[in-house]
Image 1 (tube, rainbow over the protein chains, first blue to last red):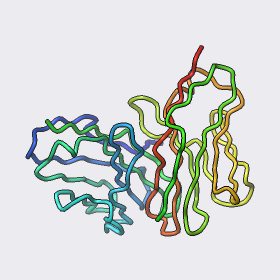
Image 2 (cartoon, chains in turn green, orange; image 1 turned 90 degrees about the vertical axis):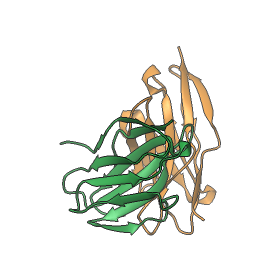
Image 3 (cartoon, chains in turn red, brown; image 1 turned 135 degrees about the vertical axis):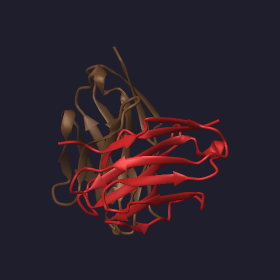
Image 4 (cartoon, rainbow over the protein chains, first blue to last red; image 1 turned 60 degrees about the vertical axis):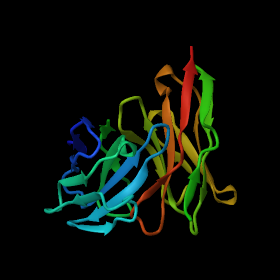
Length: 113
Length: 113
């Protein structure tokens, strides 16, 4: 079956602009996660959804970052007033439920100029 | 605080030789443990996982890992490396809350012909 998909695969934007990154999880997976991977580092947790609600957003670095999952499937990560330090690969993962193995998408590479 | 450490940033191994990647974890209780592989420009692929039971875990692509509670380790091994195994490898732990993976910094494996 289809895996986790993310769009776009690459996004180049200018400092101060607003961006949206989309994640389409594996069908039937109730848990969805966003991670951020900076160059040369392991992924770092941003936010976890169980169904439609954000069960844990403790990894969001500041209030410029926000994510939604209105129907419990597709999720959108939104970044306002982008900064050069936001440049990274943003990874989405889903699992059947929490406390389960997570399946990752290919990521969106965000570059802020 | 929960943490996963991969002491080796780079490892170079000859094709056909054995490979061992180290991983140490620090959690209040034994976490679920995972090894992922990331090839250039690719997403994270799950190699194997440890939840409980047998401490020697078999994974895909000929990899195995051994959980050692006394050493807080979960090292990854492969008896004979192929050139296609050149990639970055990440160890990760899932704590009791079950809502986020904590990754090590990764080990980049280079395979010499």
